[in-house]
Structures are given as C-alpha cells and as structure tokens.
Amino acid sequence: MSLENAYATYEIIDGILHMKYKNIVLELPEAILIVKDRLGLQQGQYLPVLCDIREIKEINKAARVYLSLEGSTFIKAVAFIVESPVSEMLSQFYLKTSKPTIPTKSFNNTFEALGFLNSFK
Image (cartoon, rainbow, N blue to C red; front, side):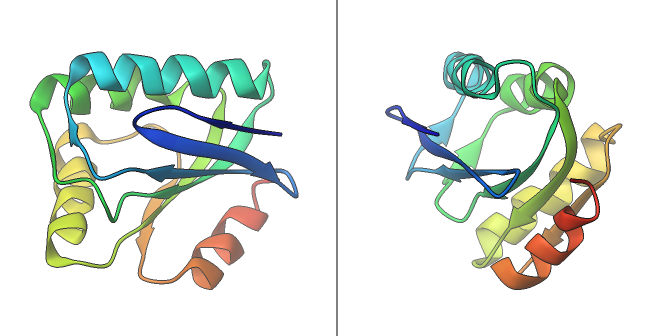
C-alpha cells in the first residue's frame, strides 16, 4: 500500500511504514495533512515508522508539537533517517523538546534504522 501528497510519500513494506518527507518547510497545516493521510493509509494498524526527514528544510514549533502528540497515533516506534547537519539538528531538537512517548531514535542509514524498527513489528 502506498500514498503520496505534496509533502510526503508513504509506503507500507514488510509491516513497517516508510515515510519520506519532500523538500518542504513544515508548518501546522502541512503537519495536520501529513498525519491525516498517514492515518488513512494505516487504517487503524499500529506500525513502526521509518521516517526520512533529510529533505525537511525547517519545522516550526506548532508543527513539532502537533507531530509529537497527534502524530504518534497508531505508531509503535519511530526511526528518523538523518544526513545533513540540518536534519540531524532537527531530529535532536525534536527528541529533546518534544519528549516523544514512543521509542524514537535517529539513524544515518536505513539498514540500522530498520534493524531498530524490526523489534517493534
């Protein structure tokens, strides 16, 4: 199953939801649509999520808060894929300020991230 909107792509592969953000500035309206589309694709299934945030340019506070609360619905665990100093900084800032209630880690490669998420399937 897969889905795409103006802000992200979503695909469920082997029990893990793969999300890849597009080259965007993430604000509250975008965050609301991203979560709405993700929930529609999941259809009530709790899944671990591989979240590629390497192309996010910026995320504002309202979007961060929304994603940390509403964005955790039906998610078992999250692995962020980071690369550039910007995406690494965004993930570390999110982890420190939002204190997610589900297991969440950042990784520089997909293989390690999938290893982490496989234990939550």
